[in-house]
Length: 381
Image 1 (cartoon, rainbow, N blue to C red):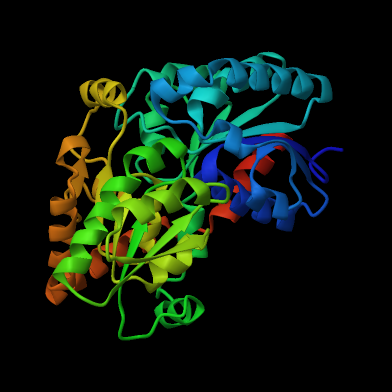
Image 2: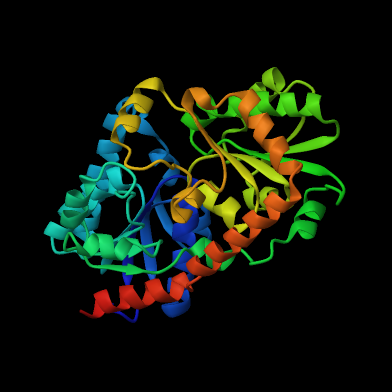
């Protein structure tokens, strides 16, 4: 089939990986309209013609406690996928994020002579730096989202290319606030707070309650605030009882997906640390970053962290441009206080907007084209 019609194996986990992989697939199909891609993926990938042998939701676990609960199933899926890919021998395998799963898949594929690309450098600059050894064994090439990563990987003999972030290409430089509000039936004069607790069940369990309690406080402190809460398909039954129990008088509308509409429409967001904070930054939205997890996971991660920040806007800026509240510090009082501080300080919002525009321009690199160029060179090598 060759470069003119490559067959690709892909694995993407969770909603963020599904989004990244779908944007990559869209660009690759513009280059190779007849390319075939199969493996583990989500609905956005399927929209791009991807054949999902397993859904990406199977990989939506976080931390060692959750991983242990699902260990046997995850290992079984990875073993079955490895055997199938080795038998079918795609021209290239692309692991999209999910390093704990993908490294254990990419390494035997590479040993079997299948070329491997890892899309998204794992955050070895933030914690668990020892993973760089696993990455070196797993990947022929790494596609990096952030400009400082290739030089870091070069130090370990890993070939890498900065391709920018596909979200920076897909999200307009000027957020479509009016259109998003119209789509969500919100008026221009409404004060809107977006609640984004994350896409994993564990995040709903640990983070959604504190966001909803903060919303209840905000509703008591300032009348008329509208709250929108995007949820991934399949989690409404988990989220709705929490809203009824904890949101008090806050008017919270659940949205099936539509996180980009929520971010474009909102005045401020209370948001779980992760890729969503970068999306909020690209929409130039003031945010309060929060993260809570099982206490055992927290103890482990806290000891292995390398830097002061967890939110991507702060990491990329190398300073706190938006507030972060982690674990016990993430209280409803703290979150509601910081949300009101954003709403009441226009000059601070303007300064943040300027910094986030600079960040957006840095990451806007036509990722699909750059990634396609890198993948073409690998296929032709």
